[in-house]
Length: 132
Image 1 (cartoon, rainbow, N blue to C red):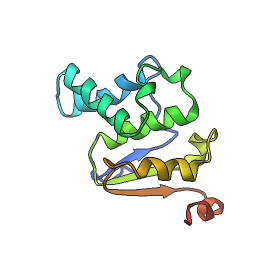
Image 2 (cartoon, rainbow, N blue to C red):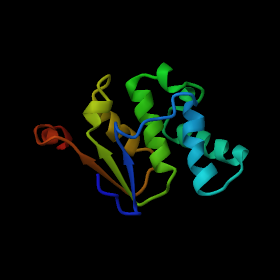
Image 3 (cartoon, one colour):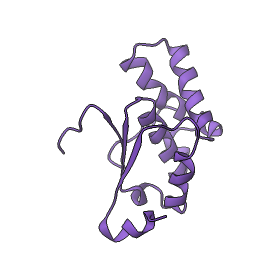
Image 4 (cartoon, one colour):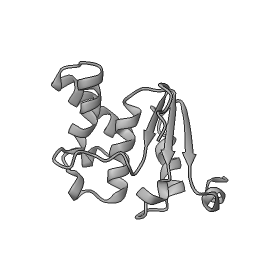
């Protein structure tokens, strides 16, 4: 795959979570290693992101213990915490087979803290799902 521009954060099936880490720790890796925040501050930011997405209750779950939608929220939070202006969601149906995903994504995107442009790339036969 070609590298994405620096203004893009991506959520995709091929960007796995660290199975041995909790949702909180998977998200906290971003501010910890990319912005050099302390572990405590990184964890605080990760918890705040989960709170903003309305999924604070998944913070301690590890990847094997998550539902597909919980895993997606963790990946989404990890992408959003990068604070890039564009968010690309690549084939959400492959990740969100446990919920009606166009509506699930709309609800997440409607949260107050969500900013920037959200772009969904999906198979052409699924494009009708996003017309609303």
